[in-house]
Length: 540
Image (tube, rainbow, N blue to C red; front, side, top):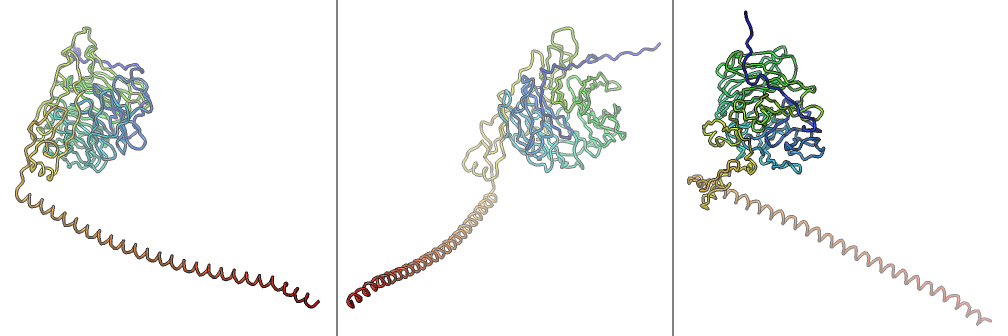
């Protein structure tokens, strides 16, 4: 007699429940861009959604307590000149968000507590490098202010946002990069590309460690690192059937699991919960959310259940575990964008009878603090992300933190700083960040230059002085020419005036002479009849 044993799992009865409409966000003009992005990013403080905007790109940022119908004139974050394609909240500061756009620029924004009271157009920093649209932004999981961007120019760039400089440039992709993901400690990077291949890089040296065929279909693929090192991918086969796979980094060509799901056309976004090892598959245009559990025993990826909704989804965002309600055994919270302008809030819950804190459901989760700095990471240091317990609740600590950007000074500023004997500030290259409240009390060491450097600087100054003197002489000569031309023109005008005056005098004299002659003739005419009359009287 044979019977089937039901697999034991504490997540076997996870169920999803949608909040009422008045507890959701309505009247949102979700972006109509065809780019394969989730269009939504969420953290314990804010909800950010890419929206339609005239005259450029924008996204809306809402505090979680601002539910209901959103006003049409609600303030936006609108500094981009082209449509926004992707947004991502910083995992180490809930007030900082990065955005990539079709205008080829990546912008990092600081959102004030309480949300926006007016449209925000000035970012904290602009990251300018890409030559074509930027469709992917991704933060490092454990290093502070490290941001990855990828564009349609096939370039992947890793930035230090605190200084605005490029740390690593990866240019070995032959086509558009669809997705990228760091592993748990940020020491490896996995990417998927339009050439159907999956690649693993060393993100510090940009060295390609391995590559393999990902999915045979031509549509977009996605890949994520799981907490214990495996790689989970989604894509299409040659028949355009959607499928997922599980792979080991050292054997990318041999998937551990490859399963076909359905024949839908929408790209599947894998959303991963590292605490519970649950993967949620959300397809663009789908009306369902499938969730799976990854375990060490075969078949490794176990289907749990499907959450069904009546409307297709345009985008989706997953709340970090810090923002879940532990009192109701909530293990995940989704923000699902519909085509009708509704952002639907979906809560995933494990039913438990006890009201006590469930330690098996809530292991230590990702903390808000960074484990290492950007300088330490690029120098070769690895560190797992910091974790903390949700027992007793979570209180955000990023209220007083703000992102500060310290641009690196040029050599002339460093030279003047060293001659003045002062250290610190931008001139001496002292980089500080308010996110981790670090400071260098002693300032940066003064820059040391050789005699050759000093001679080169003096030569440049002499050349500049010579150019200035030459330009001054040229300007004086031009001014002299202009003055001479102006004097000739003045003389000509004066001569014209004199000639016209003499002509006028002659004309007036002629007119006076004519009048006098006319008067004399009139007098003669009057005198003639009188004399004639006198003569006649004498004759009588």
